[in-house]
Image (tube, rainbow, N blue to C red; front, top):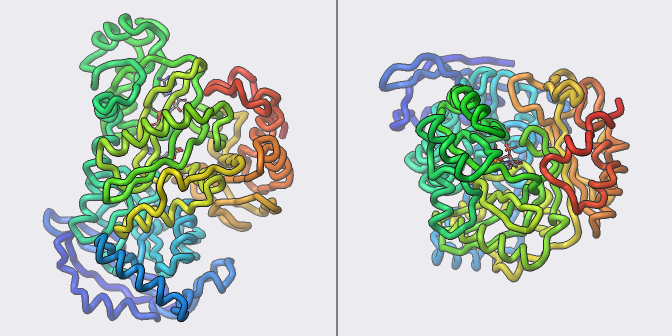
Length: 546
Ligand code: ADP
Ligand code: ADP
Ligand code: MG
């Protein structure tokens, strides 16, 4: 491998010498690393390390490394004409190259849709992810920094630098990391890059969970009773709690991923938890502000997938039930929700679409609700990005959500009306994490020495692991999602049981035994009385074998 190293300076105001860069973007360059080197108030100095020549040693099929050749057949000229016509009407800017500002399974997922659409891909990676699957599958790769997320996937300057030097025209943020960061999305806009997601305004309106609730109340969407915005201190929290009644939840306004939520059953709990919750939120999210919400006893988590375009059209793709959780984090998701009725779906769908319209939303988003045992539903939050569990919606609607995100980002109008959306069959997803369920879900990263993935009709595996892959300890412990589709819920559950029995990951512990216990549980199989406390009420952990 020939290496070439030099130092260049550039800042976000485009002092990059483009011609020089394109020379380096020749086909000989196998790998281009941009390593943040030194920062001054005006410029960031980067160390660029170029590797020429030989192929990498990844053990993925070489055919997937080769760029696809796209040929325009004669029949596609009609399609092309139509696209040109639409482009003129709708200000469409086709995306040619997407940088995926993420890692893991979602980066792989985005690359796959891009390939099918004829869009080139750029993978960014940290030094811990050199052997990651998304790096092996992308057309171009850029190393953007060290293992710690702060020094790589969360480093806005490095991510934008990678987009600039590779000539990407769009950025797909995936979920987590910078996906709900409005500074990032507006920086993309400033640099002329398409951000595959909503406007910075919409991100801000929904990113702060307390503000989001206020916005939704104003739009007439039912919300969980609680504080009017941010709490000023513990005493205010106690006053509000006495009014709405215990138990209550203290929630970090910047929280996410199930973190930053604390349950208080009385004023004593509330006073003692307040400082701790705020300090934890400050440390985890850089924002210690809290709000208060009534704790809804035994709810189901039901969320609506929405889609909106730049021209004011908004629809929903039905719901997902994500009630099977551990520590407020989803473990199993299914679509449709087993207790959904046509009437309730229409009401929740309308509320979700109104939520999106209220903030001029554009792209894919998810409006999360709590559904009480008596059928009332309350807005909880809106996630302004693709969701981990999006595949189950794809399975029952037949719509590729990533592809639709990219089309909307190009400026195309929604290709569906609400009446075009038909839900067919039943889909279930389980999140497989490299964790020890019986040891308080402790993450146990390590080397996957061998892997067997089930197959057959209606089975899908979205993952970034492969035999011989070493899971980095620096990131999320989710290593894959097993998704099944069947004509009915009963058949989907049987299929998942069969798939979970076949699935075998050797080298690291996983949540597979936990899922086997869940799918053997009578209440789960019956489906009608599942609430977010399912794991505890059914004492599932005691039934985990292996
Ligand atoms: P979903 O709602 O799509 O199921 P999760 O809540 O499980 O998503 O979060 C998806 C990923 O994003 C997880 O890795 C989680 O840790 C991360 N994440 C979500 N919100 C935040 C946040 N506010 N801060 C940090 N990480 C977050
Ligand atoms: P995150 O941003 O971490 O996803 P959410 O506000 O979406 O946080 O809540 C995560 C989970 O916590 C929900 O799916 C639900 O199980 C539980 N939860 C949140 N708010 C309430 C509430 N008011 N009452 C009961 N459970 C709640
Ligand atoms: Mg949530």
